[in-house]
Image (cartoon, rainbow over all chains, first blue to last red; front, top):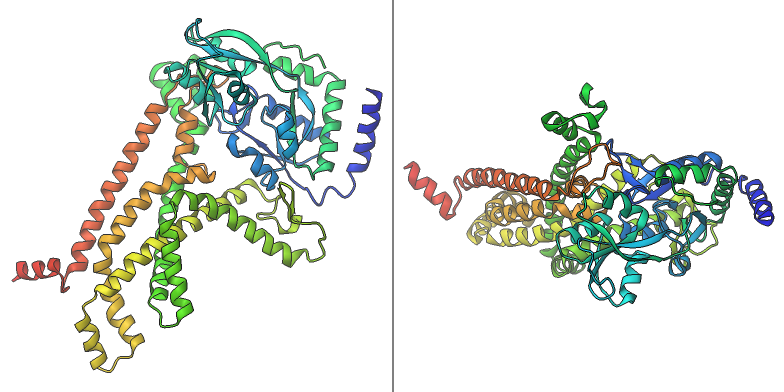
Amino acid sequence: MKKLLLGAAALTLTAGLGWAESHSVTRMGTEGAYPPYNFINDAGEVDGFERELGDELCKRAELNCEWVTNEWDSIIPNLVSANYDTIIAGMSITEERDEVIDFTQAYFPPDPSAYVAVSSDVDVMGGVVAAQTGTIQASHVASSGATLVEFATPDETIAAVKNGEADAVLADKAFLDPIVAESGGALSFVGDDVMLGSGIGVGLRESDTELKGKLDAAITSMKEDGTLNAMIAKWFDGMDAGY
Amino acid sequence: MFAHCTDPSTLSGLSWLACYLTNGKHLAFYASFGTVMLLLLVTAPAALGFGFVGATAARSRIPPLRWFGQIYTAMVRGVPEIIFFLFVPIAMDQGFEWLRHQVKCPDWTEPVRQGNDFLVCAAAKLPLSNSPQWVHEAYNFGLAVLAFAIVYGAFAANVLSGAMKAVPKAQLETAHAYGMSDRQTFWRVTVPQMWIYALPGLSNLWMILIKATPLLFLLGVEDIVYWARELGGSKTSIYAYPHPDWRLYYFLGLLVFYLLLTRVSEVVLARLTRRLSHGQATMAGEAQRKAAV
């Protein structure tokens, strides 16, 4: 921890120089379709846990940030071609992604993924399971022996289960929780939760080491003073992140 | 919008619906219909321009120009539109940025392609990364218009080149007999008369163009399909206006919109055909002449 702190302090000291002119605006890329992580609220603006977190990170790192949304399945290609500077979209840190882009330290602990189905006697290992394209859940379903059907948006995966196109859906439990709670008993969790990924971090271009240093330092400072824990508890129904 | 909409959870029935249909997201949805109309209004003349240049180039006596015209029409017509729409904006964007990079940052030593990253210097970014969001959106829209114009320009080139050939030979010979040069014959006889032959093909193209506008969605422009899907998806109580999956109704709305748009176009185009046929040596023109006698 001490080492991390020292490193972070050193980074904050050095990163500030020569930064302002090259990145006068930091464009924050998100999906805007994955409540409570991120969604477009009724006023048409990006809202959710990651909006609040991102704004706080920008404040602490003294960045001038602007929010943009992008479809999930092209969110990494558009980051590497510099259409925006960060991905802050509930993206779990995985080895495959880490080969293409860089991640900050996790700002959200590894969260279990869960299966949701209409009836409780669904075979999640052998049936048809829906997942969003390009997610850790999709690769898990593909390797579990179940038949994978992929959809472009999280919302469509839920719709597929409701209309019987898929037997179950696999997604982050924090995303499914409010959906199951408000379905009036129509949907329920089935099978065991699975632990996937190693937490959620901010995605960055590998060449963007300055920004990475700044954001890492900001996340560290939010973990230190407890604001990150409080923010997670606020958006995720009292969840204890344990940072 | 309305004063009583500040707390939607207390509303029900019609007043809920009125507030729901006038929230910020819906206003953006209504505005996106304007985006589609703007696309049509900008793309149609642009495509016609591309088509005219393509058709005249394909008829040219200068071989490189002729090859260019012929390759343009053949290539674009032979590739699925959707591939072109995915390819052109990315290629154009990177092409423009690369060119600006060469001009603005000649002393940049690092490679532009670093593994996965396509990196040009900050001054060469298009649009500049510190420009406001609307500039980014306008730029994306511009790239989309360009892609549409290139693809539909090729179709239009084909239609126009057919129409130029359809102008009766006797008219051209008469023009030559009066001592007009090739250029004069082209501009004074062929071009004014070709439109009536081009019109059926062009109207067809207009209809196809209308129906191709949802491709905007593929290009990341927030068009009516984007908003219909976003608004229609089921909403939990984290949103101010929770509702189940309503995509069916939103898409039904789009269906009606497109039907109306194509219907209005048909009526207008039918009128235009009648006007242009007047006094022409075509069957429709001949029928009008006989009816008038």
